[in-house]
Length: 221
Image 1 (tube, helix red, strand yellow):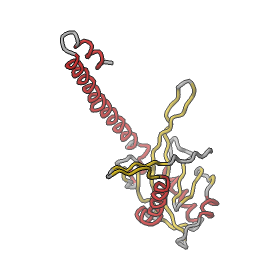
Image 2 (cartoon, rainbow, N blue to C red; image 1 turned 90 degrees about the horizontal axis):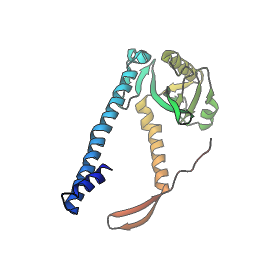
Image 3 (spheres, rainbow, N blue to C red; image 1 turned 60 degrees about the vertical axis):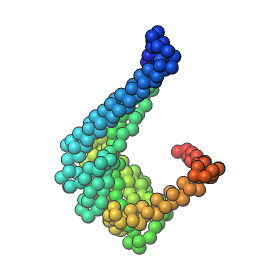
Image 4 (cartoon, one colour; image 1 turned 45 degrees about the vertical axis):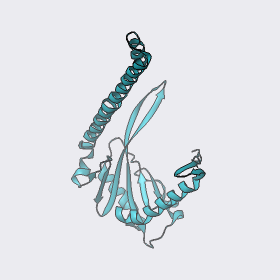
């Protein structure tokens, strides 16, 4: 709108072509200011505010245990010989008429291996379910759950609880690097193959390659 306004006002003293240039310059300047200054500043302060929350007393236990705050704003570390990842999450809860609020919670993950070093999907499905910690999901040698005390989680209690489940099920602790080099690598390859299967080449002209990707199937839950 401002670009059009500048164009119209410029027509009073300038030709149509020069006025169009002035309008485009005004439009471009506003875009640069909005993206380069406004958007960047907003993201910077949002990140700074989130980091402040993640270094508060709520996460003091993780800091004492030597957990590292990743640049993508999640925690990773070793506790009693087990690797843990803590993912702070935010979810918008709609209350009607466009009103609502953000709910902040955490997801706790840890890797494991079976004694036989095999993949047992059926056993993982049987192990998944409600525990005293919350609903724990076992899949691809990774256990994850949202703590029942998600508003103010007791990380020690949740870590100890998950370790006790691992020991009861005779599961062996698996470090991040071990998981990524084995099961994580298999998952990445399977995902790449799935993406390639969805992609169909429509036309190739020289270096131009036109492809179509099939949309994911929606699953109702």
